[in-house]
Length: 357
Image 1 (cartoon, one colour):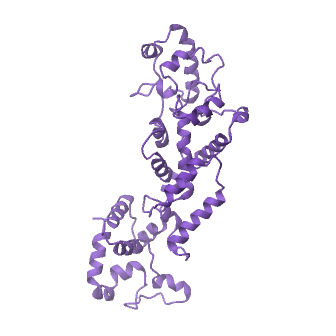
Image 2 (image 1 turned 30 degrees about the horizontal axis):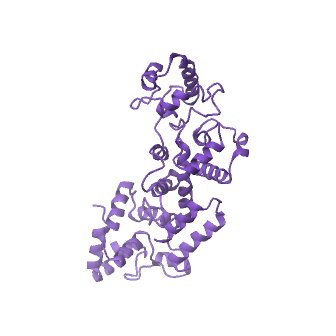
Image 3 (image 1 turned 45 degrees about the vertical axis):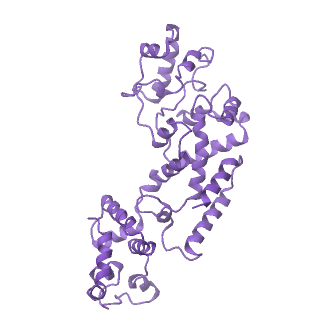
């Protein structure tokens, strides 16, 4: 789709927030184009979800969030990767923008609000919305900074921490062992950064701060977004990866779609997620013919109006072919003897592609 790159240019270059009403209106325009301004025949969650049985239509609001989260990744590095990130970092000096994102203890943002530039305030608003909706930050984030952090004592000034800066000991992930993820001892840090013995008191202050986040002085497993941030802001396809990460969040992907529950009722047994994944994979690889693949998805997602559905409009619920049993989609395609006798070849092909085995 050529529309998304054009939206990306606007989202990335406009330093002002786009009203949510405009984004909702744009999303409605996408859906009107898909459905030809007719009534939706597939649930919105199925249409927008790219995984777990969804069709992967673009979600404009999530794409908008992913674009702005890319800018926040530059806040998570000690050395700003571009000129604009350097301006934002200097604007908050002596604090660092990283402390506004990854500090699990509350940071008094109001004390820095008068220093915020307009885009900085908006970026922080987007961050707060995303953290409230998605699981982006772990309980003890490895990206929590120990330099320029307002939650740490004032005597940890940059004049005393210059050796830590040179050794790139900026965040908690730089102080832990890469395998055990436990805090390194002071002698180990001395070997790594050539710290003098006088810095033992600073190390003890960091240990106390670390213990308030994790009593065992051990970093937990980072979230997928934290792992993405640790790779740095200069990544190929970073917006696409962030967009997919947001759509894969538990709030969006753990819900079972309605058509999945309906098929479980039809076959009178629970269909596990592994079986559904095989069905989705077979449906996506069914044919290079778009029309044929479209019919497969229509059957799987209960698109067609069967006598069972039309019964709500005072129509007979009996099957059109045999006239006896309830005319559900499962009965028509799989158990109706009259229909199977007429269309044995198409039914055989459909069963072959939709079968999980």
